[in-house]
Length: 206
Ligand SMILES: O=C([O-])CC(=O)C(=O)O
Ligand SMILES: [Mg+2]
Image 1: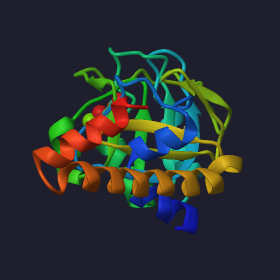
Image 2 (image 1 turned 180 degrees about the horizontal axis):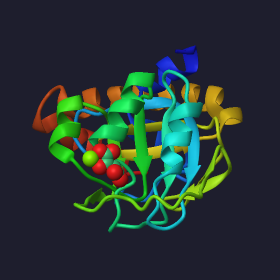
Image 3 (image 1 turned 180 degrees about the vertical axis):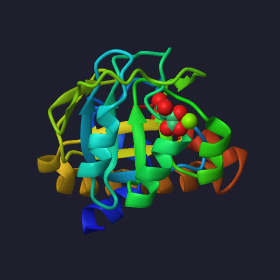
């Protein structure tokens, strides 16, 4: 993992969102399958034809350890982009997680694999296998453009994108925000009601 990736892995998505101004937050209907999932890594992008999932295998073939598959499934909720079999292949290669504006299946088995998936939900239906799709092209997912190699960070609050060229200064700004939040929390909560009232007086006087 690079230094920037380690930093993103330790930062809450909320602080990163505050640092970016929130312009690259994915729509909030893309949710983690489990609350404890935390991902931070580089995007392998996938663009799927509606209802298809063949290109996901191509993306797994192209992935390096720690990469995150970011899959534009066009919001399709009726056909799975992956199930436990495909996800076990991705996990075996060292892929860190999937982010998809589509759905997955074989949820019980995927939970067993403890593999971080962020999606619109689940379905019983397999994806179609007629081929097509592209890997490592610019995509749009959850209302945000993702370039191959962009940083993707996700946790229980949601998922966001940080363009490669912005990563270092966003890390610095997000770390500063975490510190500021800690100071504020201490100010407000350390001495009970009196300090909360003093804090509110200060903020409301602005
Ligand atoms: O066949 C599919 O579309 C996905 C699937 O069930 C799996 O990967 O296990
Ligand atoms: Mg299956």
